[in-house]
Length: 436
Ligand code: 13P
Ligand code: SF4
Image 1 (tube, rainbow, N blue to C red):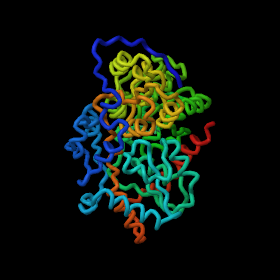
Image 2: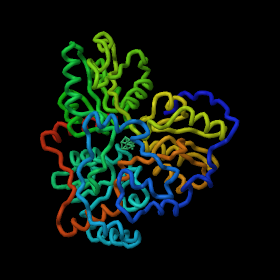
Image 3: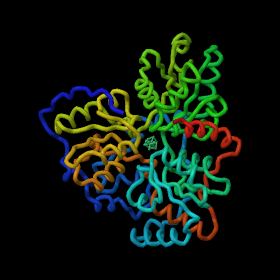
Image 4: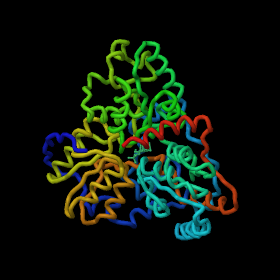
């Protein structure tokens, strides 16, 4: 997991907040003030004075909205829920969720991704990264209902991997993933046909877990596989044992970072831009490529920069920098370590008291680490402190709304994948789960 560390250029002025000055750091009350009485939307949290410092919309900051508009991607349709759910005092709402949770007993499992906010994650029976959550969905097949506090592609995977009589529920259907939306199945199919048309053989498609079930199905029927940020290098091994090249989507950066780790030279990688003929490459370049990377990215992780790492090193010479592999290659290379959300948690947890950590991932996870380990100095690399705005759409109000329906025997917001798509996607997911 350790990668090359670049030398930090010293900075004369220290602008990094100290642990106590960092908004919300080590302070549970700072997290709970985010509990709002109004329904959250993609912009509404900007008006919360507690989040002034976080006044950014990740997708806007990185231009992802433009990209998504070009794809014609809109949010998934969430039915409006009564405003009373948001006006309810947080304590009453939480108490009611616990009550319903107890009433449903073993019939319900609540899964939560590490990026979920504290007010949501407190209810999770199991908290994990994408890999851990998919494993849990595949093995925990007894509960009738899975309330999935994460984003749409994760709930789809839980539906594919879960038992026949299990129902997967996404509390807010607008909780998608902007990166997953950057690879439209028809565009990937068209690219695949173009590559086949050029007579390029031995291509193994790999889709990152952050993708639609249809893309997982595409991999299932074309000899491909799914990967997550925790197993991508081993999945590359799997692919190169079976073919000569990899077609990786939708995250250009995870694909490139993994290829670098596998010692594939940069001049053997090309980027496929779905808006360009031949993805913006010549036929010759495509024939010579060992890795074809889809032009997609995570709007949260694209914000991290080498300058931020240099600043952290200048301000805290003993800092250790750990970032998610969805960050750009130069950021991953400038960091000390990179890995999945679970890796980031494990590595900081295992570190001795008194150590300093700059973390390049989503803010809810960084804040949780700060709260859980007050004996360490942990801060987010990005001073603007960006949350994942799609993960943020899961709110306790939606949890309560879905649970109230469940106790009445009504299922709302169920995520069901078409059986043919699910069957093909399962092949690619099972391949991933079988990778040692
Ligand atoms: P992990 O699999 O590391 O939890 O990452 C999921 C994700 O969406 C990161 O942006
Ligand atoms: Fe998608 Fe990025 Fe949010 Fe992860 S952090 S769910 S990749 S938008």
